[in-house]
Image 1 (cartoon, rainbow, N blue to C red):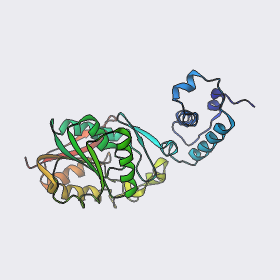
Image 2 (image 1 turned 120 degrees about the vertical axis):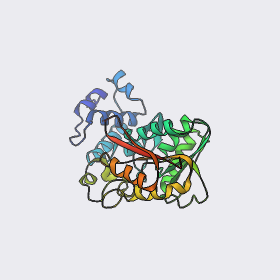
Image 3 (image 1 turned 90 degrees about the vertical axis):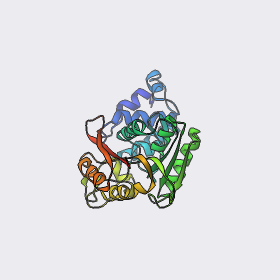
Image 4 (image 1 turned 180 degrees about the vertical axis):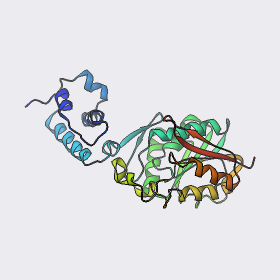
Length: 277
């Protein structure tokens, strides 16, 4: 029985996905080793038996809820294509807002920049790619995440960023930065969303932060001034309902110019403050 690209895509059923057609196209293009545009250009082409089997296997995993990014082993972020794995959170478009704010608030010239909880290295690599004169350090507690971030750095050929293992600031004694950014865990332990969608497959250590979701944010805000030079900024991504609490923590710690920034959906997604000015 013939299975053209058009026929395969027409009969795919992914009832629990919000984007079933996109998911199917991405998985089929991956199996074929072609861009998605190939599927539209050559809809009459027929994958071979091995490709069909691989496609069906990936669809079965997707029906179980496994994220497309893990199935592909790759996720786009900013202007970069990043390898991903189950060791790290999947980079999300919302986090690009943190990159934008960092580029706005960071120094215009050379600077030392720290990305806490770097995961795939997405934030650090995006900043390094946009600011060649910045020296960016990305740290993560998980060895697998550090290995993955280093692999992404090598693939992208960015020599102004380094990655190292550190539990937040633990391995950074005596180092100072002009800018610190972080997308830390910020979901409450009993949040029902943890049992839904892609996050079921992502590491809980990258998602959950105590009873109210603020434990890691509290720790970062408390310790960050020890590693910030005067006039340096601390910028934090957080949940859409946490801006008021995070801004209050920043003000209590002594940060100035405390403010929050909205994402493309209009939610207050990033908060930050300036130290020592």
